[in-house]
Length: 85
Image 1 (cartoon, helix red, strand yellow):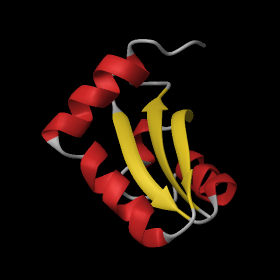
Image 2 (image 1 turned 120 degrees about the vertical axis):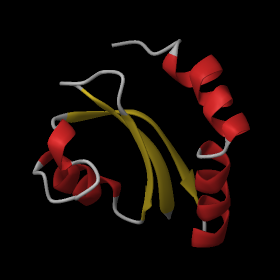
Image 3 (image 1 turned 30 degrees about the vertical axis):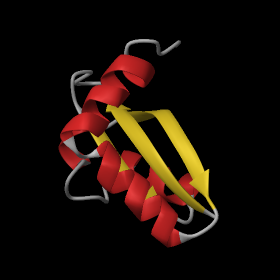
């Protein structure tokens, strides 16, 4: 399985990160240990969304969509604003 995920910084709540991995638990831990260059200055992170896909191609297409203008609007409208802590 492959996972597309969205993280929100707990220290800087307006910062989000969208990524793709085959091992969500390990990748999330690496983000929070500061081992990922693009996210290390905004630790700690929490997962606000993840979706599972049977193959990398489908996951990659969804990740690209989420990073597009319409994908960001979808996330804002349906995932971020309705998040429950």
